[in-house]
Amino acid sequence: MLLKITAVIALALMLAGCQTQYQEMSFSGGVSAMPITSDTYRIVSRGNGYTDSVTVQDYSLLKAAETTLSTGNTHFLLVSGNDATSNTVGQTAGYSQTHVYGNTAYSTYTPGTTYNIVKPGQDLIIKLYNSAKGAVPAGAFAAQDVYNNISPRVVRPKKPTA
Image (cartoon, rainbow, N blue to C red):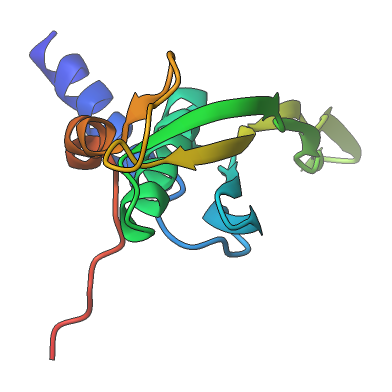
């Protein structure tokens, strides 16, 4: 029983290493912030087939908080959100084996497997506010609180050592 539990934990850790890391957008996914106006940004997050949708949501909110803080603001309001998850189908190859016994050949065919690949994605439009410059609308997130709560749980790329 202990061996099974250890094997499941090891497999989960290996697969977690395959998920999209918190990084700028690349071919394997990531997150980016693009200005629309001086106080409105589009946040785009994409994961790969090993990334959980909650992780992509964390990446979106963390990027919104970082963008807010880096522009000297204190709060952000979600203006809109869009589920940008994509679904594709994968297929493994089938194979055939032939065994010869005397003058008779026996063949077996094993068909390939079809499987679904879900790549979570999320698009947000955020509006930035600074509490020192005026009232912040109800429902706005405090960027520093969001950053403090989400940042410790995201997977970041390892920085190369010199």
